[in-house]
Every structure is written in structure tokens, then in C-alpha cells.
Image 1 (cartoon, rainbow, N blue to C red):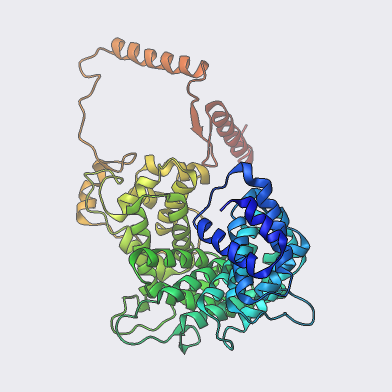
Image 2 (cartoon, rainbow, N blue to C red):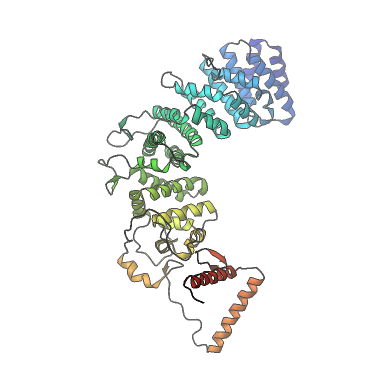
Amino acid sequence: MELSAVVATVESGEQDTVLKVLQIYNAEKSQCFTFDDEEQEERKKMAQLLIKFLERELQPSCQVTCLESIRILSRDKHCLDPFTTKDGLKTLSRHAGIDYSEELIREVPDLDVILESLKCLCNIVFSSPRAQELMAEARLVVGLAKRIKLYNERSLPHEVKFFDLRLLFLLTALRVDIRQQLAQELRGISLMTDTLELTLGVKWMDPYEVATEEGLLPPLPRQETERAMEILKVLFNITFDSSKREVDEEDAAQYRHLGALLRHCLMISADGEDRTEEFHSHTVNLLGNLPLKCLDVLLTPKVRPGSLEYMGVNMDAVSILLDFLERRLDRGHKLKESLTPVLNLLTESARVHRQTRKFLKAKVLPPLRDVRNRPEVGNSLRNKLVRLMTHIDTDVKHCAAEFLFVLCKESVSRFVKYTGYGNAAGLLAARGLMAGGREEGEYSEDEDTDTEEYKEAKPNINPVTGRVEEKLPNPMEGMTEEQKEYEAMKLVNMFDKLSREQVIQPMGITPSGSLAPMENAIREAADERSSSDSDLGLD
């Protein structure tokens, strides 16, 4: 059907005729996501007419059809102007049932109208910064929060709840002020935690332990999984800075309650492997936002039959996180987005919880036996992580190195032992630990246990490569002293030429353990000796 004919019919304003024409238009364009530039002005005019038409007293079926047409038009980013006005957004939010006023939220009884309006708002907010700004000014997040708060009392269909949560996610992702408003004024963390608890349908055994039946937990149904993931994404947005700030006891209790729910999310599956992976991914992302001292809820549940116990502690959740990490490593896709959240979470958990660190070390860095191969060669989890330490992406290699460094209790000698000095050099240089030593940290003094195989091979291990190297023939064997001196000067001259032409820059280790250009390192070392001599009263 020609767009000009549709516009002319809508302009006429006769409800029954408009309904029939829009139904035809919607059927033809339901799967249309690209639009002809030549009809752009016609679409803008149609959008204006539809918003005005929607403000009339219409039958619910006509409202739904009109909103379906608006949803189709809202896919075109160049035709959003009629929808991104105060009046246009007010009309759509009123039909969505979230038009906020100080006294009340006007209710729209027809659920199909609410659903279509929410879909329209999601499209418009996603594509239009102006719409995001107007939504913030109109405080529509208040209306959304009030309806979400009533989920326990009102029977709303899954689709309405889902698009409520999707719209809330978009608003909190795209507007910092809405994020802060939800978190602070509307107590969003508590609200969304309660909504997650309702969606998961959990019962509590202890304050921070979800009750579970014996045996495997049934998978979370598809609709509940979809809503739970939207809730997790909203919570991620409004807790983004929580791990970096101190929290009082009341907030800590709230975060621990949320953490216990997230542990439950890790323990259950969704409908299918891919959906479970996505569900667990959102859970891991949010766990990384919790204050570090609240991560102890991962270890809180009592050890029960079938639980994985280590040092008297339930390690089920930590084991699942480790399995999740290995699956992401094996997949090898978008490593920065998929790996860094779980690596950071495990690193910080290991840093603050001794049992977690020792369990992870036993799994990732077991006592060395194979010292014939380089640390990065092989299929063990240690090999895979060491390979990441020289990854092209700086964030990925830093996260992998940091994780292994913490498992080594931030001891340089132990770190080099498991990874090789060549792989470890990047982190050591960044930390100023090239000369050895240890970072300050609250770690126990227990010693690393070496296997007999490692002790036997240790004198022959090349610390740079981290393996036993075959003895190579001496290239200077059979040379006279003059020939050796000639080859040495030849090598010095080659380095000097490369240095002067700035192909390479000779580096040295300063007394503080960091890398610096050679001349600076020599000067700092001389200054250090001079200072030491002065302190001793030497001339």
C-alpha cells in the first residue's frame, strides 16, 4: 500500500477507516527495518498524525494498531522528531501506564495498549538522546519503579514486565541522572533485589543462604530467565561504583542479600546451554560490582552432601566461576568483554579470602611437575592463562597476569617460577618489581611445596622461559682470546648503531625495581650509592 494513501487516510481521521488502513500497513511492514530515504518526509508526517490521532478517545483495538504503526516508524532513526517532544512522549507514557504525577499514575486498563506503548518507548529511547533527556525531566522512572514495586500484588503478563524492565535498563544505561535517581531516591537496589527474588521464586534457609532441595535444581523457565537478566542488567547499572566505595553495615547487609541471590543464580541453569551462559555472564558482571567485603556470601553456605568442600568451606560457587572462566578461555571470542569480568572477580575474591585463594591455586597452579615445556605450552588452565599474559589486548593480559600474581601471593620469585620471567616481565615492570621482591599484601607465610621432579630439575631451569633448556654448544669454543674480543666489540658496535639510530633503546633496572633508559638507570644507581656513602659518613 502506498505510504501517501496511508497518510491521507490517517489525516481524514475516521476511526474505522484508519484502523483498516493501518492494519494493512502494519502487516506489510512488520518485518521492515530499513527505510527508503525518498519517503522520509511522508513518514515524519505520518508520525505526527499518529501521535495526534492517539490523543483522541479511541477503542483499545484502534489504540493498539496505531501504536504498532508508531513502533514500526520508530525503527527509522531519521523520523523520530514527532515522538521526541514533551507532548509526544507524554502521550506514549500515559498509554504505557507510567506517566508520573505527584498524585497518581494514570492507569490504562488494556494490557495490549501498555505493551505496545512500552515497545515504542524502548525504540525511541534507544535511538534518541533528546527522548532520553525528556524522559529524565518527566521523571518517568518514578512511574516505572512504582509499577515494578507492585509486581507482587498485581498479576501482569510476562511481556509487560519484560518491557518495563527493558525500558528501565535503557534509561539507566543511557542517563547517569536517572541511574542516580533510581539508586538513591527510589532505593533501586532494594527494589530490584526484591524483584529478582520474586522472579527466581526463592525461599531462604538462612539470612544469606537460599534453600534448595536435595539434588539438582530445576532450570529456570524461559520467561523468568529473560526477566531476571533484565533485572541483573539494571542492577549492574546502578551499582557500577559500589565496589570502589565504603559501605555502612545497613548497605553491606543489603549487598550480601543480593550476593546470596547471585550465588543462587550461579548454581542454577536456564533453558539451554547458550541461555545459561548468558544468564551466568550477567550474574558474574554484577558480582564484580559488589563491595569486596560482601563477597564472603559466596562461601557462606554450609557444606552439605554433594557440596565441594575445601578447608571446611563450601566452594561450589567458586568452582562454578572457575569452570565459567575456562569455558570463556576455550571459546576465545571477544576475550576482553567475556574474560575480564570473571578474571577480576576471581582475583579480588582470592585477594581478600584466603580459602578462595588456596582453592584456586590448587586448581590453577598445582605443584609443578612438567618443567620440560614452556609455561604457555599445553592445555591446562595455567597454560591457557600464561598465554594470555602476552595477549595483544592490554586489559586482557593485565587481568590474566594479575590473577596469577595474586595466586602466587604477589611473590615475584613464585610468579616467575610458574610463568617464566619472559611472560612475567610486563606485570613486574608495571609494578616496579623487575629486581624481585614482593608486593605488600595480607598473605599467610606458608611456603610453596615443590615436587621432587621440580627440585631435581630446578638447577637447569631457564628462568626466562620457565623450562629446562637443552644445553647448546658454546659458540666461542675453539676461539682465541683475540677472536673473542673481536666478536664482543662487533656486538657492542651493532647495539650502539641500533641505539643511535633509535631502532632500540637500551634499558636498565633502577634501584626502585622499574625499567628506565640505560643512562637514567646508571645515574639513579650512582645517586643511590652516593646517598648510601653519605649516610655512612664516607668521603
